[in-house]
Image 1 (cartoon, rainbow, N blue to C red):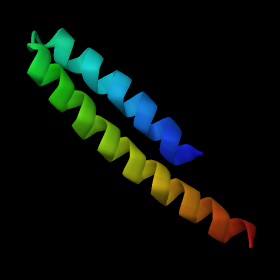
Image 2 (cartoon, one colour; image 1 turned 120 degrees about the vertical axis):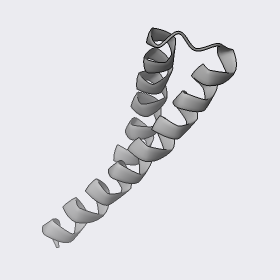
Image 3 (tube, rainbow, N blue to C red; image 1 turned 180 degrees about the vertical axis):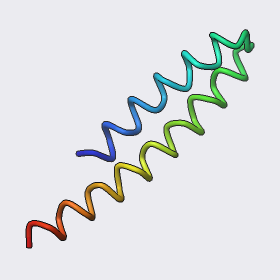
Amino acid sequence: MFIVAGLVLGAIFGGFRARKRGGNTKDIWQYAAVHAMLFAIIGLFATVILNRMML
């Protein structure tokens, strides 16, 4: 669940960040994709850590 949330939030955050910096459409898509991957990896680690703590 954290992975999907990280993907969505990362894409939104990356898109807003690129738009704020004055990027064109390709810049916005690239920032959104990179931030989505980064946040998904963070969500993956959070999921693994929480599952390990519950066992």
